[in-house]
Image 1: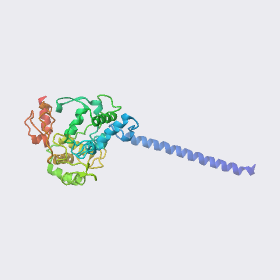
Image 2: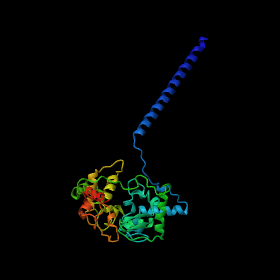
Image 3: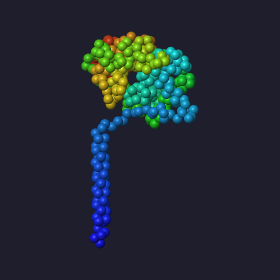
Image 4: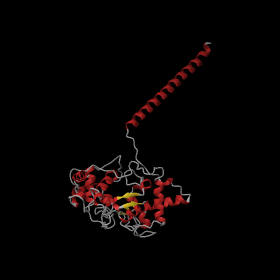
Length: 331
């Protein structure tokens, strides 16, 4: 019997080691799982909308090809419709995604996540019900300082198809989180264009130019970085000409590499750089047909007449809280 003890002892020792290692591995796995769960529990629930990746478009079908073309028109508008466009010459050389980031898919990046779900809708600026086609043309005429597209064109139908595709799965009438520009708290003072110039020089000038002229691509037919002012920038009828829109957009997306989880600008810097950029010269749009009910004008709409006694300067730069309080007392 003694002759067989050694192999038996070896087997027992090996078994003990294996069992011990197994227990250790299992315990470590359990500990790791608990730590992971605890970490996740401390993180805020992220409920914002994010758009589909363009490579999820099924380009093997005719409908997929139309959707893909719609994405291309958003991403490379100037190539097709800019001053040197291969389809038409109807816009200022900027691309839709200069304002609607990454094809309109980024949270708080002026995205398209609620478009198909919420249009047609009443828009006070337009004095009535507006369709998706009308909303797209607002951007063409204001942000791109160009001409409207006929709704029957292949280009407009492609843009519509792309927005419909992005909105797949969003219930009608629902606006998911992150599908509007984030509203920043009003400053107690007016936004300061002089302070904003310093913010621009430090954070924006390297891409958008010392004169706000932007940077053209190597082919000279579109902007890699869009102009912030001047004849090729958005006109004063665009949404970003309102300081609250510009500040909210800049806070969560600029400078390059920022997002709403990782912002670089303070709220005041965002307001001030908005004031600086929107104090610079740009194309003018006749807006006499807008806001027929002047009581519906936003607090920071910079053109009168108004139902209050505040100046156009205060409506443009603030402080906005007194205007807000004045509106509240009239209700």
